Image (tube, rainbow, N blue to C red; front, side, top):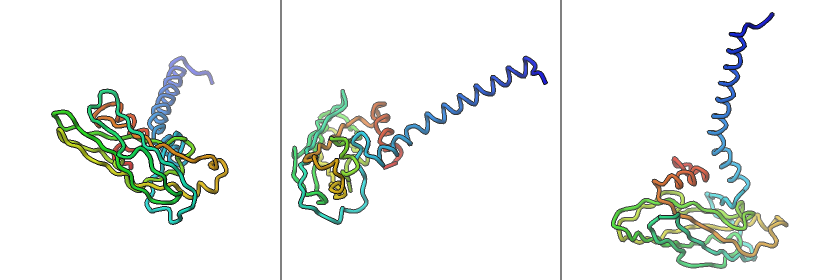
Length: 195
């Protein structure tokens, strides 16, 4: 049976529509799938969110350094209260960052985060963090914001982690209404309360 030109055109049109629909679906699925991949593997220094403390403290010490930065044009001052601390693997520790809004208007910000070296991502766990939700500072207001964390003792079972003596926890603050903040939050699965 021979297809008429009309039937060929309909077939090509149907294939094109199906291809476009598949590509759009893949684009929407890419961010959540990438986020899941990063959370499971710690890829790109993505830290873990923990519900409970480690339950075991080892003699092995890790120096944790704290880094703070702001998106271009973001009006807050933002810095770690302490530049570094030494913790035992498995020990729950509390660190603080300080933010100050030096403008004459209230600003809502959100922080993205990672750790370096990236291979520490699966072993750096946060129990609580200011980065889990937006922070609003009134004009002239200053706030100390906590991060409660531990280094997972299971890293001691991994030979590839034997050389790790220090880790840097980095945060970057964005204005929550910025498009860049929305992209960064989506990348970390924080949009719409995913954290």
